[in-house]
Amino acid sequence: MKDHMKKNSILKSIMIGTPEIEIFIRQSSRSRKISLKLSRFDNKVYLTVPNEGFIGQAEEFAREKEIWVRKQLNSLPSAIRIKPGVFITIDGVPRRVSISEMRCVSLSDSDLIIPFNDNKFEVRVKVFLIELARQRFLELTEFYSLKIGRNFKSITLRDTKSRWGSCSIEGNLMYSWRLIFAPKEVLEYLVVHEICHLEEMNHSERFWNRVESLMPDFKTNREWLKVNGSELHRYLI
Ligand SMILES: [Zn+2]
View: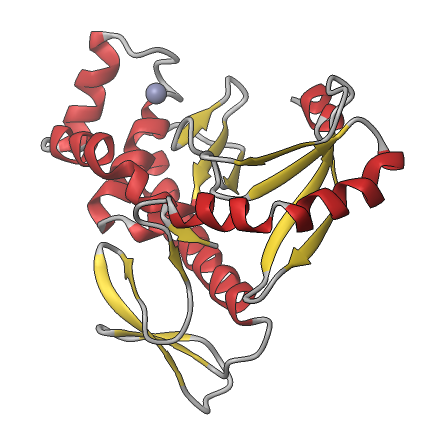
């Protein structure tokens, strides 16, 4: 993992065009030339360069390809940029993103209320959602950990796509914060799943029986993730 990070480290990000598109410049020791790509993993645009010496040239390249980049971004079927007026699902419930004069971000049954519309808007929403996800994961993980009598060591939230969570032999748990967009019971299922790995580090029958003993209808939630999981990545945040 560390090795991979080193090879693909982000050098900087640039903004091109109007409305602005953020492009991340990353270095890859394996690449020989500049390449531009929309990642389906996180819906972000990446410029890959062999080394820092290519940055200037890469920026120019990105500006020349602006139309192509826009086309690629528009081709994302369900990408949603977080801005006032759009709906995002939190706990599986659609909430309208709205602006108010209050100082803090808050959540009501129908709205996600943001203080004001400055250039930190998306960051504010993201920080709020990650924090909300952290509280949920922490509460549920502590609850189920007590219930099965196994301790966990740490909880980390990430933005991953290949898997929604993981549990190491040492008891370090990782969850995708994007599960905050999913129905509450789906997020809970992930906790149950990872907590059961503290007992069984595999997906054996014994493992699934343990999951079922804690959450009898876990299959519905597992299926929900299989069918709708990509929806949680549609928000460009
Ligand atoms: Zn598993």
